[in-house]
Structures are given as structure tokens and as C-alpha cells.
Image 1: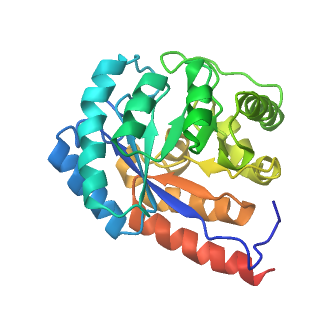
Image 2: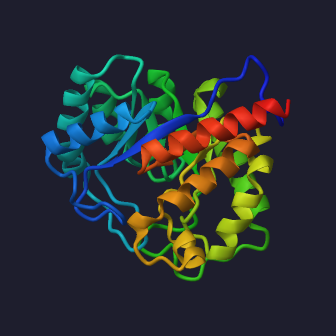
Length: 278
């Protein structure tokens, strides 16, 4: 991927987060009812979201797995209702590590799969993405959510995350996923300390150079809470906008955020600045 945008490049996408869960780290329980969830999604679209990422299982540190039937009960009505309300150009992503949930979501109208396990938790996931011909996000995660923040260790976090993503890209290709359908995600906050997250933010351009579009999910993450001395994660919108601007300048193509309007502005300004340098 080029270091500066060309006229053939497209602006970065903003992916709005819709957690249909009781226990997500920042907004758990706020959008558990279908009507409330759909209304919030429509609001994010009005603010400039290109995609809505819908999840029925929290992957916050310390969280426990949610059975597939319960995930389906939470997300499928929201996807169906939202698909009825928005044009096909507005994309819907299913945030799950379960191939069963992903397949049900695709049948209900979802367009993308966002898998925080990069196809490792459910061996059927990569084959499903290949069969359905949909984009899939492959994220790095050290350990399982229930214990991933218990003393994570790397000798060189950027090199190790890069190596992991190379291996998962190859696994996806071997399963039949088209190269142009693969995205990668360094997994900010998933089995990383403050220092690891900062190193990954500083090394984003190295991950961009792998080729597949990079998705950055730094929104309201706790490492910024420590930097800003702000314990209220919902108050980290300005800090998140800073990570979005940094990501755009590094060549990141998708930003998964809670606060769409501010991050849309940050992405648009950073994009124009980056293009001006080309």
C-alpha cells in the first residue's frame, strides 16, 4: 500500500460499533432492545458511518463466551430490521467468532464478518467467508478474553503481530478466501499492555505494508485512559479521534469507533492532509 493516497485510493471508512450485549466494556446494556439498537445505528449512519458492526458477545478483558443461540437471539432481529431501513450501500458487519452466528447474520442481511479470533476459535469461519464471498477481518489477539490481560508478553510486539497476521492471511487464502476480501486488525487492547498498544500505534504503517486493508479498533480503549488520566471510558472521544488521525496518516483504511461524528471529522481532515502530501 502506498505511503500517500493516489487518485485511485478511497477515503477511510468509519465503522460504527453496536454492541447488543449487557456487558461490553463501554456501552454494555444500552442497546439490548432491538428498537433502541436500530435507532442508535441509524443515528450513527446519519453521523457518517459507512458500516455498522453488530456484536452479541462482549470480548472485553475478563468476559466469558456467549453461546451461539444467545448471540443469534441478540443480533439477528437487529440486523433484519436495520437491513430493511438502510440502502444496500450501507454495510453491516457481524462481530463474532462463531461460524454459526456469522452464517445466520449473513442470511439476515450482514455483509462482512469481523472475527476477533482470526478464524482460530471456529475452524469453519474461514470456509464460510470463502463460500459466501464476503470480507472478513482477521484480528490479532493474545490469549482468550477471560485472561488475555493477565501479564501479556512479547519480545517485539509489532514483529509478532505482523507475523501472526501473515500466518492468518495465508490460512484464509488456503481456505479459499479471495485476497481482496481480507482485512487485518492489530487488536489494540487484546492481550496488550499500554506499552504494547503504543508500539502498535507507532508501527501501523508496517502492518499496512502487508497489503490487506487494516482496521483499527482503538475506540475508548483503556490504554488512552491511562495516558489522559480519565477513568471514564466514554469521555475518551477526543483521544480516540487522535488515534484515528494517526491511523489515517499511516494508511489505515477502516476505523471501528463508538463516537462516529467526531471520528468522521478526524478521518476526513487527516485524509485530505495526507493526500496533500502526495
